[in-house]
Amino acid sequence: MERIKNFYEFLNEAETSEPAPTVSTSTSGSAGARFQFPKGKYKISDISPDELEKLRNDIAINILAKLKDGNAWTGPTMIDLVASTSTINVTPELRKQLSAEGFPEKPGDKTGNYALCQARLKTIKDLMFGMLQIDPADKTATDKFAKIYTVTETPKPDQSASEKDQYIQSTVRYTGKQKDMQINCKDATTFSGAQGSEENNYVGFGKDDLAFVASPNTKAVFNLRPGNIPDCFFWYQNPTSYGLTPFIGNKVSREKTGDWEYNGKINSVKGGNYFKQGHFQDRLNDEDKKDGIIDAIKKEISKFIDPGAADKLVQEKLLDTDGKIKVVEPKEDPKAFVTEVLKDVDVKDLIIRVFSPLGDTQFSVLANCSLPQIDTKTGKINGYKQEQ
Image (cartoon, rainbow, N blue to C red):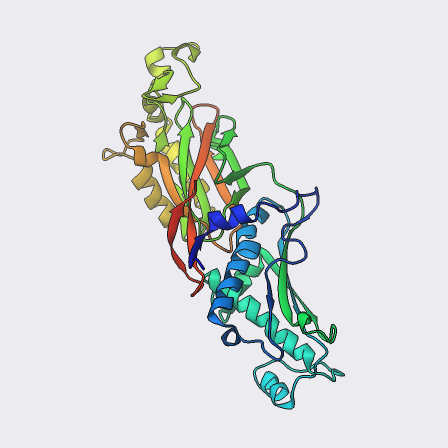
């Protein structure tokens, strides 16, 4: 069996799922990730190495790879876990062992199989969390996960005399409504907005719940494409994951910069002196405008990060060595037009602000994603592979 697979392969293998209805969807049917236990067994250590590889592979295909699409829905993603047993009685020794390990019997349970179901549910949860790089014993981490993903656990003891009922399985469902606006690893997202003003901190486009549709732990490189008039782009995922670009675009109004097509044209500037109206970098640095623009951007991003961090970010990204607002064009610094984001497992959306002091916002974002490769022997991430 191949030891290492990547999430892109998992996604391709899962493409046979049913299309989503308007309210919710189940992407893994009634079977999902499924494993058949020997009677009386429930621990990870009870599973043979070959079977454990198969189970991890199953979890990756039917749970982890499907968490991505849930980010495009307004409601929580539901991970439904089921553990079943046959009607065979649990031995007295095993009943004592289960109780000692924190799986008490349900009142009136004559077979002891309810506790066995609970133990099996913990096994599949522990495997899932481990593959997400979450310590299942870390309550802070699992509570953060639970804000986005709701795990339901259904014990089904005493199903029949057949040993085929000694299993664990899962399904994944999305709830709410699908979001129209998202950043994903397939299509470019275009932002269109207005010209910002001092009253709204020069925000030409802002969204607090932009769906970030990527698998957990995916490395997404945002390729930013502004219009003719320069804007700057701020994104926020969590207190340790955020970024700000310089003002990027054209320093002066023109149709092209190298191979880049822009929306504006020289003759689109109406009235006034062209060298004043069309020289965007000079306009950003007007004596009566510059300080207000800088202060407004600091004020806006300080809503999400520490004001000291916001001040440092603005100084580093927006200003040149003379303290003037700089505009960066593609050939000058291509790195200014890309930013890498590691998709946090417990964050569903991105907060986006595009600052547009000079004109209407025209911005597009394409995410090139590197997907985590999972070692199915250990359940750990072992490198990344570019999504094709």
